[in-house]
Length: 229
Image (cartoon, rainbow, N blue to C red; front, top):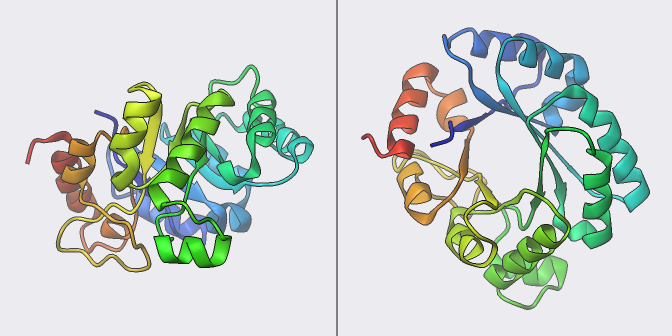
């Protein structure tokens, strides 16, 4: 069972170092736009030097040539996983894959954000199929482009696995223990639900980072995710 991915939703290197200092084991962490745009690649290198795995969550979405060039630069950071928006299209995803040539970095594509509900998708994106149909379509296009998997909610993970196979990654944010608020997420699930539905990775943020005892919360979520609680 893969480790839970902890979303480092902090604004500074100092906050990250204080948080990571509470753990005595290598973690799998997510560095998103807020943190990366504040601290840049040096922070990524620092976290990697401490033995942690990194999902660099920048959600690239641009013309194919620009994305390919950007991925070529990101490949030098040695992160374990990086992503693009599937809405950028098949050719853009293929270009992103080319940019990572020679790298061991896994490439995944965002389908629909877990903060997006079906009505919102219809109204804002003018996508009139069901949300699950939209997500499955993006997953199939990502697989066609040669990507390693997708970012999706737990609600779609089982259907994606049936269509794309068990080796195709389903990285699922929006994970909350039952007693924790959903905050700005709409399609949420518990770690146990994610395991049952076949998610390959779970991403957990505030339930750990805002906890009074982050290490204990991490252990509890890890136990539930692995089926040991």
